[in-house]
Image (cartoon, rainbow, N blue to C red; front, side, top):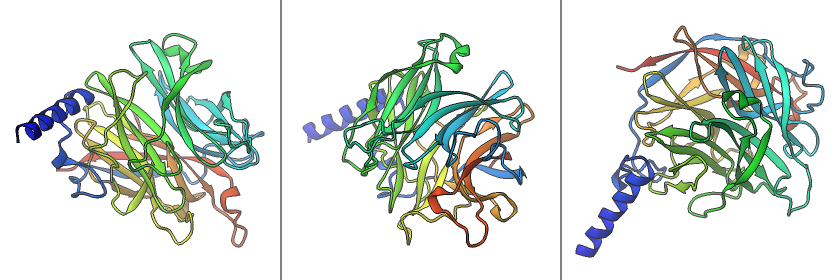
Amino acid sequence: MRTNAKRKVLAVAAAMLSTGGVVLAQDSKLSRFTKKEPPCGITLSIIEQREEPVIAKGMPGTEHNKYGFEGGCVLKLEGVYHLFTSEMVDDPVHDKMMLAHWTSPDGLAWTRRDTMYESSGSRDPKDIRSALWAPMPVYNEEEARWNMFHVSYTPNDYGRIWRAVSSTKGREGIHGPWVDHEVLLEPDPEWEGVAGRASIFPYPVNGKWMAFYGSADHRTWWSVGLLSAERLAGPWKRENALNPVTFSGVLGTENPVVTRLKSGRYVAVFDTLKNKPAKSYQMDGYLIGYADSADGAHWSAAKQLEVDCTKLWVGDIRTPLGLVEEADGTFTMFYTGFQRSKKGESKGWREYRNVGMLKLRLSVNE
């Protein structure tokens, strides 16, 4: 009994250290195998949905881009929107990629600034950078530099998470150039699938760091878990007592992006997919998932923002690119999605993916 009690105390202490003093107790697991999470404390509602994309095939800056955009995030610095995203520039689709940086003064007119990285597109199974995805910039006050997290894949879809650092010091270093520092996360069979590590988004919590990371089998399920670290550079530790984070119950979750509101509340937005679909992926998505957290570690169950795609250019929403809190209290959300096909002309995965925009209102539930 004493040995068991001692182990329990040590386990709780370790959990507190790894998450900045937040106790990740066994009876408060957020797992698809355990009890239901608390309800979400906010509601997102659509104020405006633009009927046409803000970046589309044929616009300046897309000449090299064969299949369009997916993943990444948008942030706003000194009145300028910055989009960091994955461009599917050529065949093989999903492998021959560029990680790109775009800017806009108003969210409507965009300029492509540069290519941060380009993948090989190789079919060599030993090539760990055959494909590159999901660029996520995070400013590190400790280094006074921007860090760029992203995912690399082998041709068989095995993912690794990388950290790059801007060569330019200060917040103006958002434009790079970028230098890869290390692979941050290697595999763990606890719950992760054949996709390895498929996404990451770090965010600060109590002077330390947490991050969502994703995994999947790319056919029947998509899920996410939590990491923690003392420093942004790592080492990063899986919070296995909390993983995987259920969010949407029987629905799958992909690519969470976290925003901390001025009120201190954390909000995550993410792509909602169907687990166990009739096919490997069903292109009929109109749901954007979201959840909130008071401490950045314990998250609510998800709610789903339903987008009426019948009135829009998009036939299937893929990845929300985060929330931008505006001066008037509203929020701007950019997202990627498949261009709506003409009847009988669907190209499946080869359909072009554009960037769209929503204006949202966030209400705190009573």
